[in-house]
Length: 313
Ligand SMILES: NC(=O)c1ccc[n+]([C@@H]2O[C@H](COP(=O)([O-])OP(=O)(O)OC[C@H]3O[C@@H](n4cnc5c(N)ncnc54)[C@H](OP(=O)(O)O)[C@@H]3O)[C@@H](O)[C@H]2O)c1
Image (tube, rainbow, N blue to C red; front, side, top):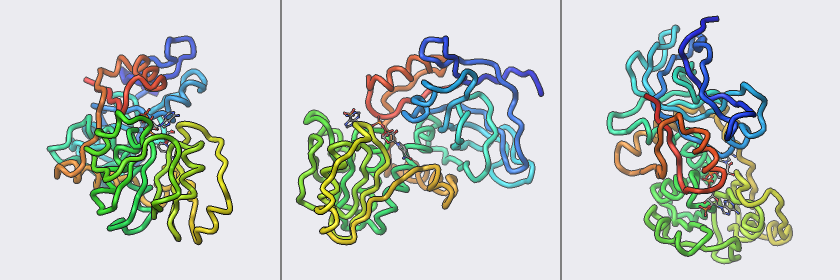
């Protein structure tokens, strides 16, 4: 194994914030994997939460964007020098990583590395969750947690898809921001009224929000449950749910969804929408990656809204 200067974010239980940047071995790609020189990464709550409990040496990181340094040996995928966005199940937060071509998409020139770094988990989750409702044109879509990383993309994508979009936020001072994203209507607070009904609910808050949202499903509607930002404990009125008729509660996990359609497909769609000026990732914080421990703590303490992006030299 080579001892190299490849640096990566690694869990160290004794370090403040449990994350440090350390030297790690160079990646050893399979024939279908490219080596990417990473230029930007973004953070998600799931991986930061896991880093808070993981053993020493674990390498977090799902979202990355950068430049192909070595193309896949089998000749497939982006070539050397291509600007790309990529998604890994772990270990993306490093200077150099091996990424399967199925999890890579080339970036149009207009899309920055920082923008692209927000696509993998937050963007793909919103895109795939929206697809669970079928054709969105003229449908009523509710997005809860609409100021969050996933919610921000979901509101914009639902609007782009032609839906009538309702955003759910915690506070009245957040109304203007989600209207700007494209929400036609805004519901404030954790109680979703029984009427109007929704054809699709993209639900990431859990608790009372999910419990009340289930009574607001249209006949044949789908509620996609994908997060529990408030609480995993949910009570709901089962009768109200089943009398709506043919309603579905869909358990969503992005890693499972990507078993059915490779990440490269959705990443390309998101990149093209951003290049066309139709989609705008909400980057609220951009810092050098050496600040990762502090940014991770700020994320978990909810000291900023939207996506945090870290840049590498
Ligand atoms: N199942 C999957 O595959 C999958 C994929 C991606 C994310 N997730 C999960 O989905 C959730 C949303 O992800 P995200 O990246 O959008 O997270 P995020 O950026 O932290 O956003 C959380 C959103 O929930 C809102 N919220 C409402 N009540 C809340 C409460 N009591 N505590 C905290 N937040 C509350 C936040 O409002 P404020 O802005 O007012 O704080 C914000 O809009 C997270 O739980 C994440 O782990 C799951």
